[in-house]
Amino acid sequence: MKIKKVQFKNGYKRFFDLTIDLGESPKRIIALVGPNGCGKSSVLDGLLFHNNAYRAIGNKGAKDHHYHSMTQTPNFSYQNIDIQFVEGDFATIKTSKQKLGQENTMFSFRSPYRYNNNLKVNQSKATTEIRLNNYGATSASDLDDKMEESYRRLNILYNKYLHDTDCKPSEAKSKIIGDLNSSITKCLDIEISSIGNIEASQGTLYFNKTDHPNEFEFNVLSSGEKEIVDLLLDLYLRKEEYNDTIFLLDEYKY
Image (cartoon, rainbow, N blue to C red; front, side):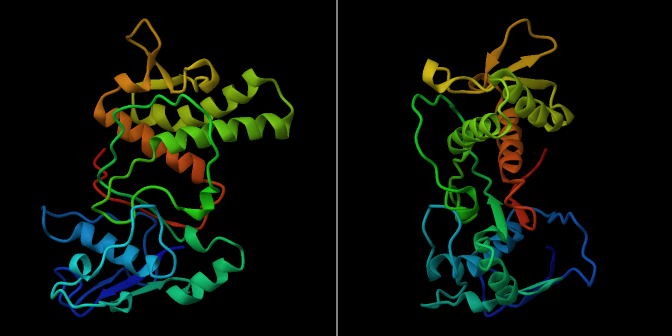
């Protein structure tokens, strides 16, 4: 699925009337580049505003006209943003995905506020299905604290793979760690060595580095390393359910 055209009308944020036309054959990767304040995040917010009128992604709550309307117009409507995909208009695509139970996988969003200072999970707990897309940021101004939830999902994935393949625990961990490292090592000079063990009070990711003699925790990574691991883990967990999705990354600079 690819966006072909998006139009912002009647004063959405700082756009009086803006159309972004990517043509009949838009590229797979689109970068919005410009100085602070030029409206890059506002474009993403507009896409989310339209989507969230049907069913919100994330769990941070909807914003009202004070956030979305340049003129502070009460009841400012999501219909002031028009989204056209190569495959059809928004409502048509949404309806087709509803039939598959995937209506909330049209967009996957990461805000610039990916705060991942600490990862230490001490107890297991249930998580909702990832296709519901109901955890994390709802708009570009929200804290996007997905890392702990992603770590829990990673352990669920490990147990599912263990059950489905009836393999040894070490084999299941090796498969998942190998999958993740195939992406991480293309970006960083570290690799995951262990996915930890919640029941043993080791609920975090562990890493190795070529010039470091000892294994170390996620918590001691640099801020940039944490962001990359966070994003790649999130994408890895979504690859099955989000195979026809627009991925929106705000402030991706690595």
